[in-house]
Length: 161
Image 1: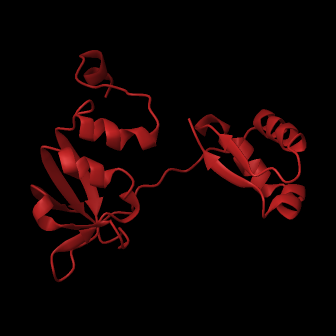
Image 2: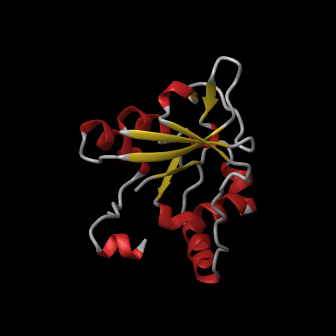
């Protein structure tokens, strides 16, 4: 990867996940080849994007070459996650666990900051927005019993950039 980045063949684009579909459809973010892990096909030839339904439909709508990595470990999900095999240029069979991101442990400093922030939020607050970098605050707030008991109906946590 480092070689691709230093040669100018790889770009890192620091953007919010929700911005990607618009950038794809506008043509500002081009995808030449996509490798998408999918479930095995059903009798009609439809695969499920499974847990990868966030960006995969937008990518499939613009990609020049789409490769399906057919994995029996990928769960079948319903709704807009079903795609016909004809949408792919190539199929590759794999049998491996579905990749997952494991969050690192929350450090002591982040936990202290989170507890302080939680202590200054008024009871009855309706929405708190956190960036991805404040994940530890969300975990502490969810796990801190006074908030869970007092604000469980009124506190809605969401991610923003």
